[in-house]
Length: 135
Image 1 (tube, rainbow, N blue to C red):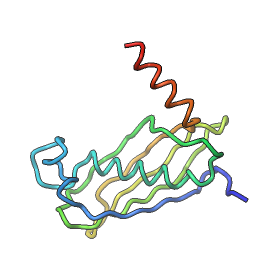
Image 2: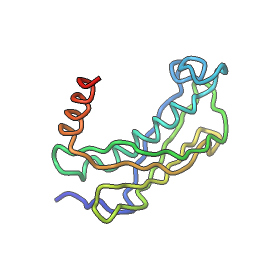
Image 3: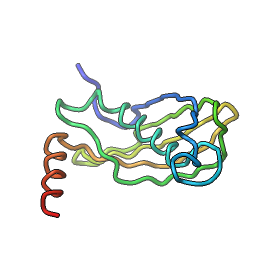
Image 4: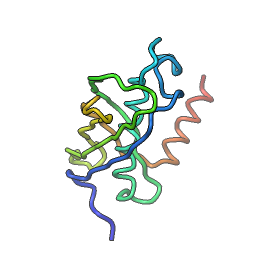
């Protein structure tokens, strides 16, 4: 039996900062440190994975809001660990709020709040494709 989609679900993942993840490589700055955009992507990916196993077949989540502070720079080659916790589920069960954090080998580098919405993957992608046909 699957676990319920309820506050308290946690997620964790880890990466090693590679050249491709640096601000100077992804276009988010000129410095050769871990990009804020890539840190946020890691937080989002960890949140997705933390709840995917308890969703109904055909469902996934899409990001709707991020409120993140990037607190410290991380050099290439250092490990970064992401931690997420589902803190709230809307009354209709579709809106999800997560606390998110990222840590490098020296300590906390980012934290904040991330919101996602549960969607039917096929319907969501179909509506998006249809939108492209209207342009």
